[in-house]
Image (tube, rainbow, N blue to C red; front, side, top):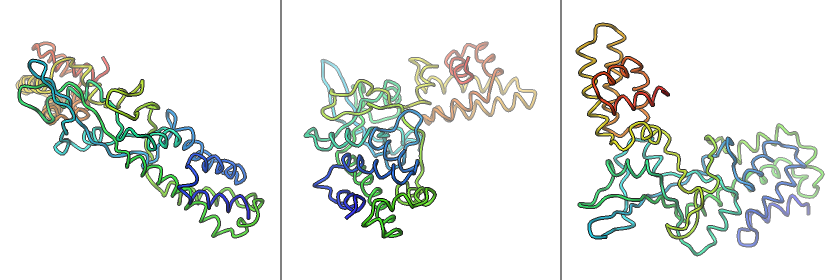
Length: 328
């Protein structure tokens, strides 16, 4: 029996062989097959997906979010489920999914631990947004938001990696039966054929997304026991907008944009001015919906004319947001 055949048996044996162990042996096979695509996938699963690496969609898992609220006289409530169904698609995804770039050994360690569910604290921009647009409790304020990942979701991720590896090996064995008895047969398979099998069985023609910079982005245990970079959740558009308007709310921004729109409309005498009015109107509507991405895009389109007018009439929140969108 060849090492290739032994590897198939070990990959199929979840109880007897860890995924990290069989991936190390798959790395030897990748060298024999001379497939850069297969080797890169094996390396990424062992070592984790680094900055800039494409992250397969099976490494994006679903999450739930819970709020911690504080009130008068030291009262508090923790573990309060936060609704996300009313949020726009992009924002909802930011709150209800998490990229897992870590190597399989790290994930296996989390799954095998006794800490139950895992997760991370979300950043201040997310908390501020949910204070205005999320679940609220009378006479209490939202202080922290915890994004929770179930142990089952991580176990499913590991199962997906193992299944993809097994499917790849089984296809090679079916197409090249000589692999059953001879490891040298791997040297005879063309790299192109191996790469095509990787695409079909490993990636399964799935979508890949931009790699995450969060290597230590989640940790096992209770809410307080998080990794050093746990608050690096990517709420990029919300964060950029928050940097522009500071402690002001999106409601404040929408109010300023309404005033700015009315002034621009009253002064409009050209196509460029009409375009600025339309862009500000779009930004105003997006701000009321909490759609930070559209707000920033529309304010950038409104441009210098809108910025100058906002500054002139004293709508400071709008002026700051427009400046941020333009990179000023």
